[in-house]
Each structure stands twice: as structure tokens, then as C-alpha cells.
Length: 214
View 1 (cartoon, rainbow, N blue to C red):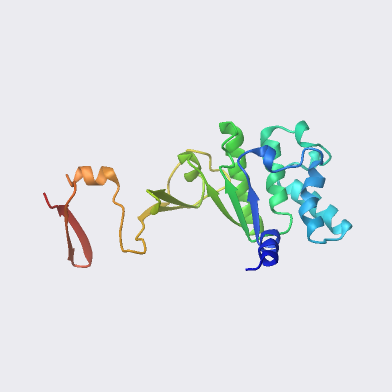
View 2 (cartoon, one colour):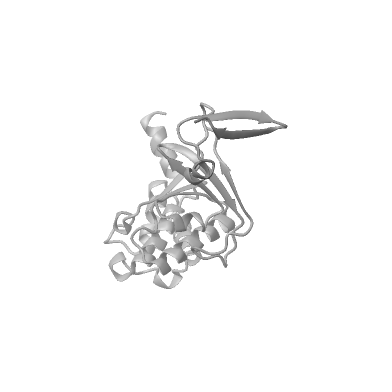
């Protein structure tokens, strides 16, 4: 990509939310003005910007705070405005870096519920990067990275009634085969089989079996 193509890609294809709520919003702009700003940069007409900002703030539950500046909002409200800002130019992909990291548990739970709602209503693909295991139980698909490589993938059926740390029914967990053919076996499974450094691998009737080689 050329520099111009990179800028266009970021403006139209990807929305982004930082962990620090203060990095997502301009302190001297109102909620509506913050949401409108990305559209100003892409040349959206004023009337359309105003209507889109109002619509997005209603979706994130802040239609009544449309004229408030960040300092007049709670941390959770600021993060909700940030979500609206990230969706301003209707990107198909939204990236969120520890979006609940600076929020209390209840507010973080509300933000995760909002992400699920945005995913369902707008069809936006949302990728959340986090160290919080509670987040992984509140999304439809969670991929764990260990030692710099994808390790496990868990899929869940999510409803708007789900809560952080809630039920894990309708859950499937898979181990990931990386590009070299390696699979990371969870430590607790290896301990159960008394496997240390060496392992024997065999294929029997369509199944791969492991046993200690020591």
C-alpha cells in the first residue's frame, strides 16, 4: 500500500478503541462532535454526519448525553462514545485493545454486552485483545495465544442475557494446529498422562494418540 492507501484503509475499513478512554476522545469536543469527526475527514455532508452521530449514540445508549464533553461522562460512558466514534465510517472491522481494562467489573460487563449487540445489529466483526479471562467467556469465539503462537480456540453461543463469568453451555474448545504442524497440549492434560519431554505419537482408527516416551 502507498501512504495514501494506508490512510484510506484506516479511515474506511477499520475502527479502533484504545484501553485508555482518554486516548479515544478529544476533550474539547462533545460526544456528537467526537463521533462526527471521522466523518468530517472523509467528506460526509453535515446533515448526514449529524444524523449518523445521533443514531450511533442512541445505539450505545447515550442519546441523552449527545452534548456532553468527556469530562462530564463516566469512564464507561466515555468508552461507549469511543465505540460510536469507531463505527462512524461504518468499518467492517473493529479492533479493541483491552477495552474493559480501566473499568470496574459491572461497567466492563456492560461494554462487552454492547459489543455483542453491535456485532448482532450492525454485522461488525469485532476483535478484542485482552489478558482478562472473563472476557473470553463473554464472546462468541475466543483464541488463546501462548508463547507467541495460537494455542486454543473456543466457540460459544452468546445471548444478550449472558454475563461475565456466566454459564458455558453450548461450548466447544479446540486446539490449534500452527503452520509447522505443532499443537500446544495443555499442561494439565500432560500431567494427567505423566508426559514430560518425550512423547510417542500414533494414529489408530482415525485418532491420534499420545503416550509418555520416558
